[in-house]
Image (cartoon, rainbow, N blue to C red; front, top):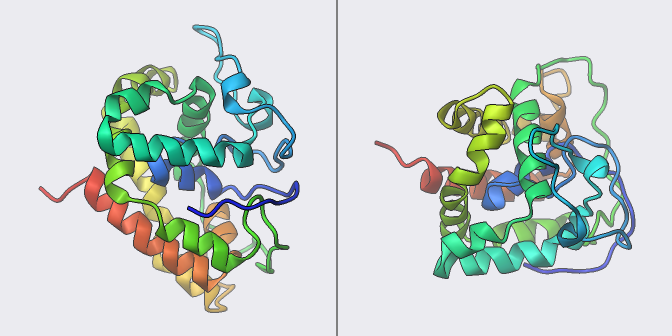
Length: 231
């Protein structure tokens, strides 16, 4: 996964789901609109929410998603060798953000009144262009993402229960959220059909352009087959 340098920028809501697709947790931005900037604290410097406290997400948790990217790559590599160890190294705030973000994305309603999509201003975080982001997406190993997600069950369970869901129900919501990002509605939006009903996350993904949408659709579909194999 190519890591570059970037500037502070807005954080699309769909990025929450990319974290989920990568290894069962979010980049840490939750549903917030802004990052903390590349000079902010890393996830290892953020204290977990105390037991019984409301999980924090995004800026409230002090997470810098862009600074997290190299660490995420390392965790994915480790997950191929020992998913249990890799899962134990995932920071608590990432898991808090993942559960809250995934549940939010899965609950979004479609609308035709979200306005024009428009193109994003590059660079976005460490990616200089849509092509560089698509390249990073294509580099993700679905086996590693699936192994790490599977090993995180015992740590996701209390967070799901805090949201009023069993782990099984939470898992279904996560799958629903990921599935929304591979919906034909996203491709239709990229193709110029701005009248088709989409969720905010789908619109934000479509704004990344055809290269990113095609790469994410292929990779998310591959990861879904690993995490939820046909029975």
